[in-house]
Length: 398
Image 1 (tube, rainbow, N blue to C red):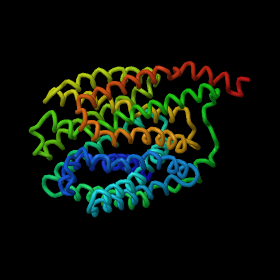
Image 2 (spheres, helix red, strand yellow; image 1 turned 120 degrees about the vertical axis):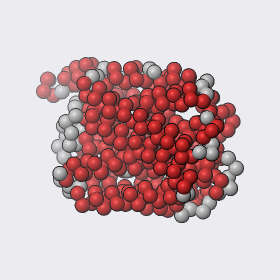
Image 3 (cartoon, rainbow, N blue to C red; image 1 turned 30 degrees about the horizontal axis):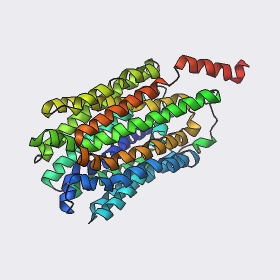
Image 4 (cartoon, rainbow, N blue to C red; image 1 turned 45 degrees about the vertical axis):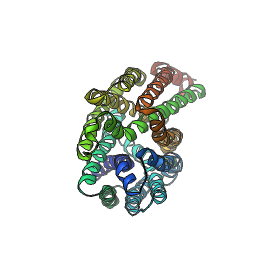
């Protein structure tokens, strides 16, 4: 029972992680008006620090998760994210806001390299576990869209940070009560990692990291820009933030369900085949969206977000399959530091690019990134060759 509650809280933590990082993107126009910033595009670069810290903070978070204690790190996460959300609600100008968002990004960086390995240690079906966890995270994005829209329309943008901040602190108290104390640091446990020749291992990790970069660019650019994209292509939403929030929540809610299907496919079929089948569709749908307007654009948005969300579990699945639990947080932290460190520039560029060239150009750029994802995925060795290389390299076969 204690582990079931812990597992539920770990999945809820993933939802909170994405929710907190996306409140700003949904509320950016309202915040810009209150702080006297001319356009929402001019305010977007101030959130870059949150995503930079989210990325580079993953490396030390992963090290502490392996070398210290994952349970303790999750407590730091819950209380840190909650406290920083309340701090954001108290800000009075753009520089205070940028600093507070950066602090929140640092605490938010703990979850992925610590919470997901903590979940995977207790499962025999990593694919569906990753799928459920991914769905929970992306339902957090949906919750950010709908809750922030309602709070802006019926209260204010500060309430949109206060409510999930208090919820995070409450979850931390529950986690403190129910999460079992771990049997020592993960790094001190015996290693059961699959043995791969150095060349194969390096290629798998390089492909995984490069794919994480392109996937994170698509993810960060879309979830931070979709609200303003809809207002540009569906002008009736400009003065209806609650309706905009509901439409975005529907997009993210439907898209998150795709991760359950991907999780099941990962457990049953080779990862590379599943990846190629999904990623090959991303470029064409971004191309279609670039030239779409109105409700046609909204339909295209649902499809491209399904494809973006469907591609997110792959790097975690590769880590689960080929990296032992004793070093899993550090590997995940390094991967996230690189991918989110690079893709945070997409958040910084969103406002200036759209202001200078429009959303059509931005969507064409995302189509080009999707093509890069396909070329990278094509380089991943198939699992039969990986197993053969592992068998040949294993000491038992010598």
